[in-house]
Length: 163
Image (cartoon, rainbow, N blue to C red; front, side, top):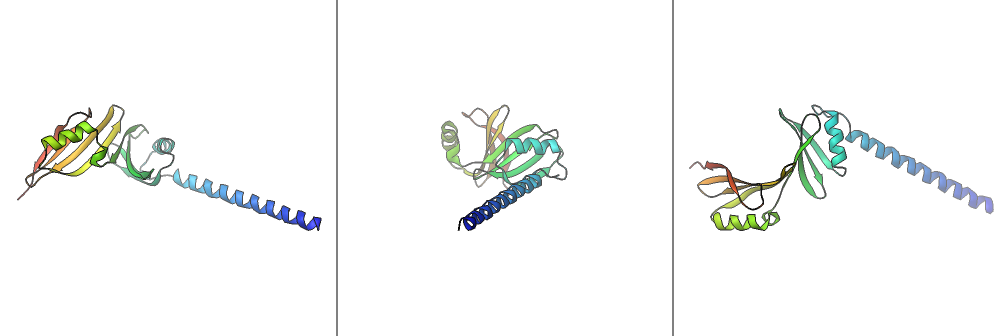
């Protein structure tokens, strides 16, 4: 009876070891595939990104002439990170809702642009601070406003709509 119990315990320990080894191999493969070569993306950028955004999921890279853009999901948010070709993080942006704006900015919008609706709104965090960009529209024009001080808006761009 005693040898049967020891046999079962030995088999259970062996099975646990196999499961642990399999889990480690799967984690290793996942980590390797994340750090694998991405066409047009310098390894320094990939290393910098993986260090900065450890929990990033659904990572997609885009290479442009002046910077590298990576879109990803993290903490139930879609984020965009921008890197120089040598791996320096330039900025991180995300789309936000109006209630995520600083109170002074939303109050100013309601006072100065009551006849406009919001068609786009995002936040950019860079080394020099946080900026907000908002696109407002009415039947005649589209305005893009920018705020860098979280207190006021400046006109970044204005376009007339075609009839």
